[in-house]
Image (tube, rainbow, N blue to C red; front, side, top):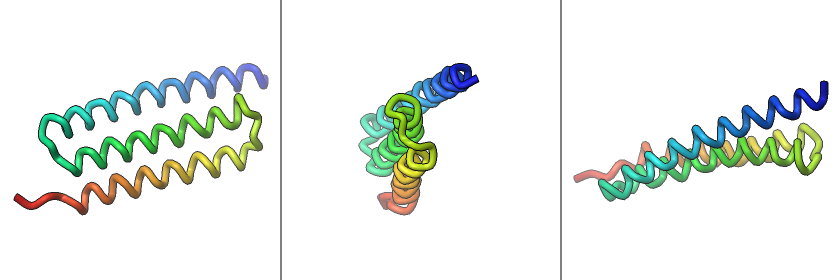
Length: 95
């Protein structure tokens, strides 16, 4: 059962990494095309959210951290990503 759970969580974290990286790519491309600072912060925010998810899985599955420690560290990184996205929404440039 542990091996099945390991591969299932690894697959899900891999999918999260791929989808998150795609969102980061699209947001960064939009930033470069429009030179919009808020889009830069959106891409950084989504990168942090994606990193939080992946870090959590890596710490638990590969480095054998305790589950609560891995979740805690991953959640802190994810929260930083949400804060960055919120900042991007409230820092809209006026033209």
